[in-house]
Length: 119
Image 1 (cartoon, rainbow, N blue to C red):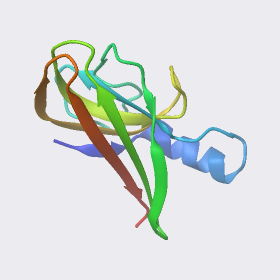
Image 2: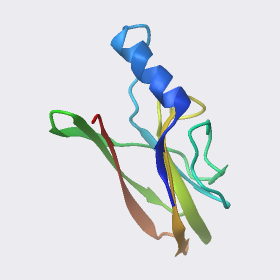
Image 3: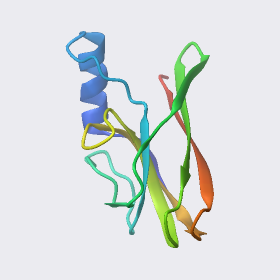
Image 4: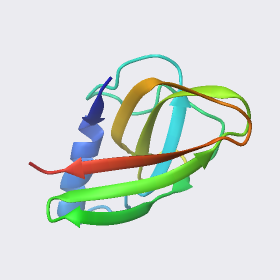
């Protein structure tokens, strides 16, 4: 299992600091499929059919940003990975994490928390 700041996520941060992009990383999506999150990732393994949701963004520490979002299953499925994006469709995958599959039935929910800390 891994949680990775992607390469395109790093490039987005630099563009954000340089003020060449105006997007935020506030959209969270989840996916199915197998794999280990990697630096070169630009998408989830297999993005699930639910629309990405807008996360609540906070700054719990001076060097940390946190996104919290709740997604609801539109059918039975096993969720294995998640990430935050700059847009509700397409966009830059900033942080990608994989985890042991969570089996969901129609209407089940998962609250996802994504932290990015500069150390």
